[in-house]
Length: 158
Length: 158
Image 1 (cartoon, each protein chain N blue to C red):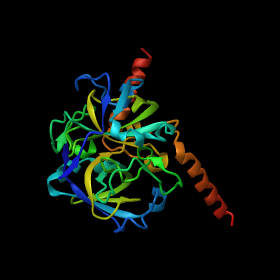
Image 2: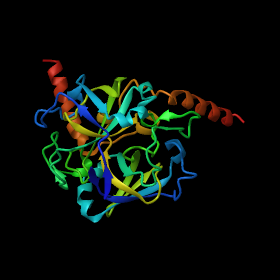
Image 3: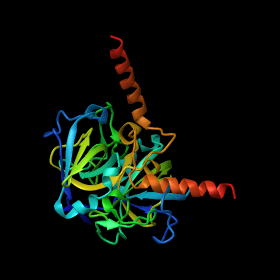
């Protein structure tokens, strides 16, 4: 077994899984904070130069592992590792969010799609040379994304 | 405490931390595999549609937490959370890699900058809508990257 410990807490307006944004587009502009515990605050030095950070956190309300789940954006079961659903063998969540400022160990972030009270595991700087690949395919999501775009376009011209 | 368990093992040509690539550019074309343990293999369904995956793994050779470290690419100490160094409070590593194919629970990947034998914690599909922000700043790395670009340009015209 590998033991990890919370290094802080994520605060957001979302107190229940139900009704949360199912994709980052749905969380645009949503403000949240990341409260880093005292003993780790010195390690935040130099982070304010980065416009975006990667948050790793514990999906503490995960329902437990299931090899297949029906994603919110789809109607058929998909292999869990082909989704971002919380029911993972190790329930680690990942969100890339804009970092607005840091004050006394509190990170002010946007587009936060994380449940209030979520235990923080790690913070990494977002570096395009490491984290932004080219020529990307996104499997089952391709079809769904097209549908979403179509629906938005319909609404726009109502 | 939060308990996680290895769900597989990452295989690479790098058997010692010394001499490993210090940035993804240095690992371009390096082939590796991710061996997923039997009990989790069904959950790999649908993943082969994605060109890139996010690997989360245990930095099992981490030297332990230090609030500041001197990154390989810099000459002065930086706050740990502003770096990707392994000495994190929770030593979780993250790599975005191209997925070439999956055979019998083994993922064939490229550009792998991970130590051979590294315990795997999670696999996520890379989704640009979730994972590729725009208008990015990268703090202390900006200066270093400029240096690197300059050096490459000098070499090109030798």
